[in-house]
Image: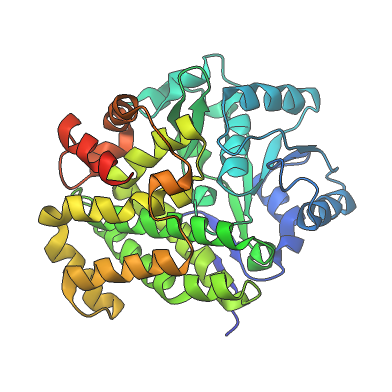
Length: 381
């Protein structure tokens, strides 16, 4: 099957193998003449990054790159990137990589013309209206993993290095103008990244589907996103060169991030502080806490999950769905507990309090309290 398409929802998306060659056209469409390619440290020297810089240079767009981006990007990375961005008189970013590179790039385009501090734009109430929308530069996004979906998101997750808290910075204009989804860029992903990012996409779809908020469009997208992960993540994991599986997972990632406009829940409310405090991989952390969260939420989601199981072709209702997730986690070599993931002797109180203030907590189908969140966290260890 040839998977190539142009989509205009939720933004302009050029989808298909080899379409990274269209990056110059994407920059023109976004109004970018002097881009800064922003990626993470691990990707900076890899062939896919260097060949992308070659494409930019050949088209007269230069080959400027900023890669001082941590796995959980923070305000220090933002400040360093802004220095490079302004010194080079760049007029837009090419956000290239996984969630960390994409989120940091979006922040550079967002913050370059703002006069208020970064944390003044946290996703609280209508704080996004504080931003000068006319001072936000354009963004072209090129994901190289299939998980976060940040390429179609209107927010970035940035860690406050002083408080070890992950903060969500939101603005509608953080949605990239053009996205290039080229599954060939994901072929070289290590297995553990394929597994972790794939389970991040699944967590986005699962939590959006279970959220009690009303958003039937997101509900449908979340359900089909789960099906794509079920059918294609094991294939992408076992054979990283399977381009159809890679392409379907890129679709699932974008679908998950589109769907979670409906809300997230306890999986993300826990994984955000755990990642900020203990530097765990976000998607893998989501997978580790997923089964305990399903158990905790069962009274509120059993009927809904049974319906999802029917759609996914899983027998046994909620129990069958739970067993499927358990088997998938095992198949992907995901650690069974947070302890096995490396979170030893955590500050239970600090994690619980951070989880309760995380924006994702409000979308959990069972109200999160100090006591039930503490029990939930302990069951993950």
